[in-house]
Length: 109
View 1 (tube, rainbow, N blue to C red):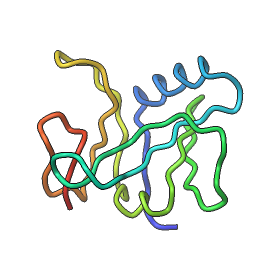
View 2 (cartoon, one colour):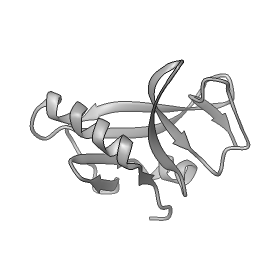
View 3 (tube, one colour):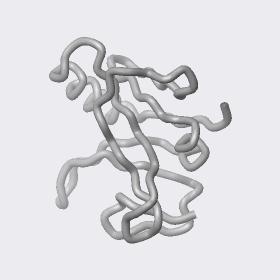
């Protein structure tokens, strides 16, 4: 599988906190779907099942799954957690995105 997706220390800490509250076996699934104001959008879900072809990213107590189709869009990206004036959220720093919306939840390639 191609692509290297990384998780920042801040994101790993927050993901670990979320997964701990979800109970044993919980993982965070990040996927890319069509939609949003720029063409594609990031989706974050709690998952309990891992597919054989998922990319698995583990850092500290955080376990993140990315399906093969989404890996193509996320190659080289870093998932970060930002707490600023507009609120706390996960942010994907994606070098493949040629444009993104103001809130950072959708992008185009």
